[in-house]
Image (cartoon, rainbow, N blue to C red; front, side):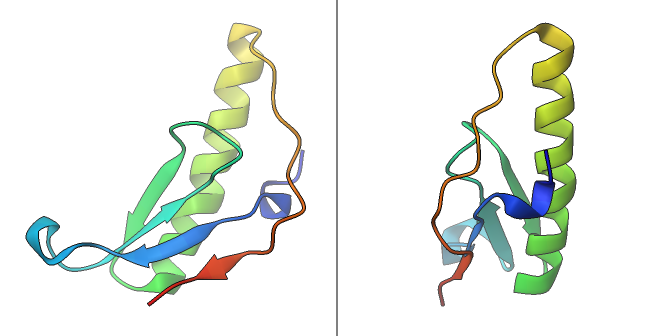
Length: 75
């Protein structure tokens, strides 16, 4: 599956967690990534998606298809 097909939600970290952004992939439970900028977090999310899918295939777990939601950046 194409990692870029999965919707990614990028949000700033809460101030108590530091400075930067977190990217969440709602279709893949537990799949998150972080970065100093929204672009960094989005790029890291693509790597995280690929790793999530590879691990699921290796362990025989099902890989959910990407949903129809759009990629989103919240500020």
